[in-house]
Image (cartoon, rainbow, N blue to C red; front, side):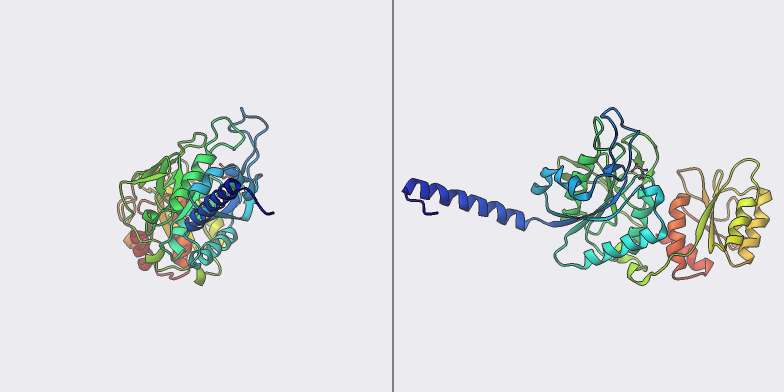
Amino acid sequence: MRISHPMHRWLAGLLLSAASAVAMAQAARPHVVVLATGGTIAGAGASAANSATYAAAKVPVDKLLAGLPELASVARVSGEQVFQIASESFTNDHLLQLGKRVSALAKQADVDGIVITHGTDTLEETAYFLNLVVRTTKPIVVVGSMRPGTALSADGALNLYDAVGVAASKDAAGKGVLVTMNDEIQSGRDVSKTINIKTEAFKSQWGPLGMVVEGKNYWFRAPVKRHTSASEFNIDEIQALPAVDIVYGYGNMNTTGIEAYGKAGVKALVHAGTGNGSVAAQAVPALQALRAQGVQVVRSARVPDGFVLRNAEQPDDKYDWVVAHDLRPQKARILAMVALTKTNDSKELQRIFWEY
Ligand code: DAS
C-alpha cells in the first residue's frame, strides 16, 4: 500500500522503527525453555475458593505461558510439555527422561536457562536428582505452586515469573539446581516441602540462597556441596536407576518391611530412624542380614533437621553401614540410587554422601 502524505509516511516509518526496536530487544533477551511436567502449578479448582481442593496437572504449558505476558520483558520463553502428571506419581523413568531432556537443552548454545514446572510433592527429589547428574553451569530452576491458578491469591504465576527471571540471570549460573517458591531462591539440594498446605511450604534448614523481589535476585549464600558441572555423575551415562527404598523407624518397630525389601532385591535400603538415625534393637539383625546379602544400608532420620552422626547411635564402621549426613530420607534415596550407578563400595558411598 503506498502512503502519499509526507506526515503519514513519517508516522509509518516511526511505527516501523519502534516495532523493529522491540523485536530486536526481545531477540536479545536470554532464551529460557520451560519444561512442564504437571502438578498444582498446572492445576484447576472448581471455584476461586478452592485453594486446596482441585485437580493437578490440567493446564498445558502454552496456556501457563500465555497467562504470563510479563515474561516477555524477562526472557524469550519457549515451552515443552514433557509430562502432565501429579508429582507423587513420578517414577525413576520420569526422572531419567526429564534429566536427559534437561541435559540435551543445556548443551544447546541457543538455550540460556531452563525452568521445570513440577508438582510440589516430589519437587525436592527431582531438583536434587538434576543437581547431581546434569553437567552444566547454566541456571536450572524447578518451580511449583501450592495453590492452583484458579484460586484466590494463587502463588503459581509469581513463582513461575521468578523462576524464569532467575533462569535468565547470569548471576544464577554455577549455583546448582535452584528452586524458586514464595519469593525465595532455594538450593535444590537443601530444600524440602515442610508444610503440606501453605504457600510458605518450602524450607531448608540451612536457609535459602537468596530472594527474588520484583524480578531482581538478591543472593546471601552459595552451595558448598558438589553439584552439576562439578559432579562425578552424568545423566548421559545413566540408563537405569537401581532399586532403593525407605523404611521408617517408630515405636514397636518390626522387621517386616526390611525383610520384604530384601526379598524384593533392593540394592540399598534407607532407614529413616528416630532421633539421630537410631535403629530399634529388634531391627538391627535384619539390617545386618541385608548388608551380608550385599545390600547397602543408609542410616537417615525421620527427624527433619540436624544430621546423622556416623558411629553415634549405631557402630556404622563395625556394621559397614553408610550415614546420610543431613539428607532427609527421600533425598538420601536419590543420592544412593545415583551413587550406586558408579560404585557398590560402602566406603566410596560414604565419601559421596559427605561430598554431595
Ligand atoms: N499432588 C501435588 C503434586 O503434583 C500437587 C502439587 O502440590 O503440585 O505434587
